[in-house]
Image (cartoon, rainbow, N blue to C red; front, side):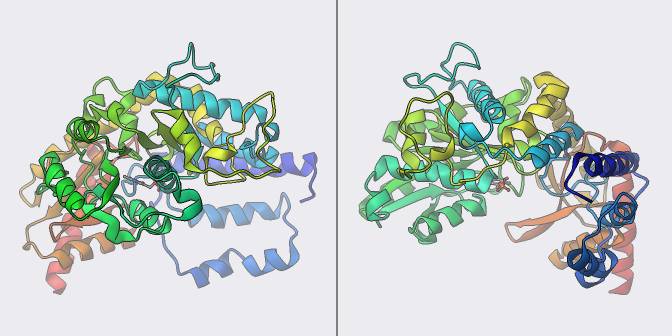
Length: 484
Ligand SMILES: *Cc1c(COP(=O)(O)O)cnc(C)c1O
């Protein structure tokens, strides 16, 4: 394959035919969701050594490679894919990736991609508006406005959390950027906070002991009444609270911390309120489901992943701030070659994100919206959340299964109880189901109890698929029981 338009078109045509067929076969459910081979075997099948040493990709040879490659993938479009909280990508988002990969406009500097930079900024305004933080005339208003919200897209929610908490640090300890993080800072968070919060706290030099756990209920939802005693205790130890972190929703269960009450507490005590809405913030798009996020506007910062419930490919996340000046405070750096203090045509996003070179992330979401409109995304959220509730009825109503809670989102946990309540049995069940490759599910533990877990990301997953899952689990369970 030469680096020219002729070879590009010839191979892109073949690849797009193969991908179209892949989507079709996956959606029809005629394939396994996942067939896992050892990496050493796969390296041979993919002929990696030959390709890397010799090159020589061509319209003929790409066919075999693509067949082997696609066969050895996790098939997210399959209705039996109910595993991790990763978007089953809308096919439109793949086109955005294709365009970006071909033209490469890393647009953190406006000059490096004016169209993509404008799309990002517009979509950030759109997200801010959903929270109630946008004060402009219309979404194309990019001017600096007092008390307007601000935000930036990042390569994932983990970086978004880091960015948000750097802003929280800048608020309480502006000198931290040059002098280092004061050691009297802590955050208040529940034990269910995503692990990227712990990474952030460690990275900024506080150490994870600075995460003060706030008590949770039996389902690991933060108890707002536990905030005051935790705060008072921290104060008597001479510590200062840099931020209170709430989950909307938690990764394990998909349940939401009570944002309204937590927000009121933060307001009363003048504390930075950070909402990790990586998965759940998309419910803002749904008139029916947005009650789950009541009080979210009280936050100072929010993260919101589009590559979870807004159907984009990985990665496309947002970190959003109620006050755009706090976004500007997060990283107080000046780099002479990149940060121009000049009058310019557009705007550089570079000062506000960890990344320097950054992909045209907004285009992924733009293509989904351009295909479906925001109503389409609302329907998708309503549909998957609704389906999850009906799957709860199905599973919890079965005599051999039990669910620990009624789902609030599209994440559902359950266990198989016919042969007792042994945790290892649930884990063995999950592993054998995945080995068989007919379904892809995950597992989680809370209160020392192991559960099977599904996340209904696929709009095609229907009742009949869950009935088939129940049959599969029943069969596998019987096998494990008989061999025990
Ligand atoms: C997925 C998730 C994250 C991490 O986001 P990435 O985009 O995977 O880095 C953070 N918090 C919560 C609650 C999540 O569900």
